[in-house]
Image 1: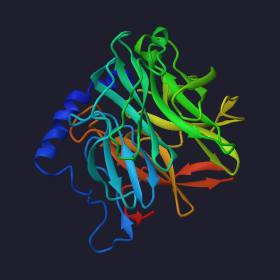
Image 2: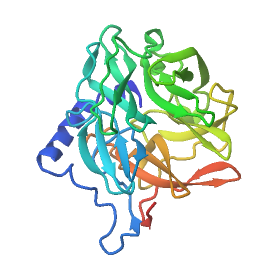
Image 3: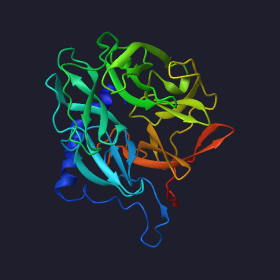
Image 4: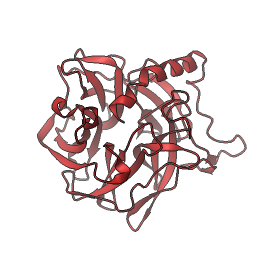
Length: 338
């Protein structure tokens, strides 16, 4: 999500802290009815949890999101993608070069049974911009530690670098996606990709521009990218438009490979506001038992930009029609659990 939006995280943090003090945030989210545990209803996390991403390790899902409640990288756990329990701060200490309060859009990847890498956006003290860091832990819960002496990516002259997303392709190569935060200084917002070293800690080669804002629905920016392959085709999903408006939405492109070229889908956006959710986007995709699901945040209609409840986490199924992703949402009625 965009820089100005994330600066509201401090106010949102106070709300979440109050929930924690009241003993609310640590309980599983009551997303299913007691009468029928085969269904659930959205949202699956009802407190402010922007920019969600989740991975599965063993029988447990681990979800991280933008800072809140005094935590740099809040982490939640779930057995089923529906009932989530707050599980602390995955990144309790920031590196010496970073300032607290603006730790955005974290994403996890598992590289070995006991090696997990967290990529995150953080305030770089030297440049005054948002830049990308990486941290390592032996378990998905952390604590992750960033031993670097500076950012992994920091395009200060392009507004900064945000929204890192790691991806392992089918040939085993590792890649990193991100956005230059051009809207912070009034320039274009590009989505970039670059090869990662096998340990996930260094960039290899040169970065590639994949796409920027060009369509009316995208407004002045694109952001929140991630890759997903389906039936051999590489899809680049992204959010676009102002984070605190109903016009915020999710779209995708099809890419020839991790360095492009990429062609945007004619049917974009594939996830947009409706009567139950406003400004849905900054998504991530997971698969469970042969089904595909989209995790994303959205505001309650009419409460865009507010901090209570803020951007809640929604879960909706994605079906593939002629190779194209179709999101069955935003949906607030009962639906089968993953």
